Image (cartoon, rainbow, N blue to C red; front, side, top):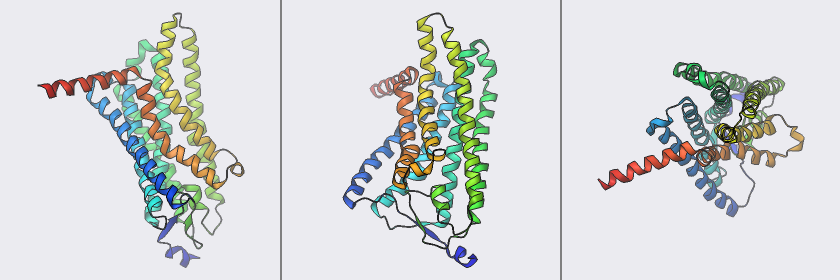
Length: 313
């Protein structure tokens, strides 16, 4: 078994079992989505950097969320596009482990960033007079550093346990990227420790953050309902609606993937769910924040007007 473990140098990602014509169609469609993901999140980052009015804690956190979405897409989508063109092209063992580690790290970081953003909205609505004191730039920096730092240890623990597993069977991963559960299925050893850690990690990194988000928004809702004017209620809710949409998309798909009974979701359906979780969410996030946020749209108009006036000069 140890001999077979040392021989493993690459894996084959099976991707989607479709005809070559449909795979080419998906290649073009997913390439377009990939470009939209990079452009959308890049525009969000650029606007926050260029417009001084967006230099606030809320948009500071949003800039990190946009950066996570870009890294998310760059970690999984290029390999998926390569597999659509050449399904037999392997991925190296080291590359597969790296992809798994980065995917989990970015997923954990996004979970924690969404919690931080919900806390920011809680302070802004429930304690508006103390907002600048509570959410100082020092506090914001500490929260973001904590989100990035805490995202890696659990992913590193998963990878360290995978590296100890022997892979002595067919090295074909039934997925479009090196997803944790799909890689573990190929091991020819007892993986109960890995499965237990995955379940515990799902509770720690999905359920606990989701509960914190729900607590924050329950307080926010109670505060909004106490606002006397209808205009004030709408303005308060508008500052949270975009974040609520992102939270629903991210945590909803994560819970379906890691908490729902696996028997209800065949492997092909699992791939589709992961496609939404790791691909469509990063593409939809900038659309949600730009289409539902007047400040972002105003910043875009100001940047475009400055560009047009500079060209005229």
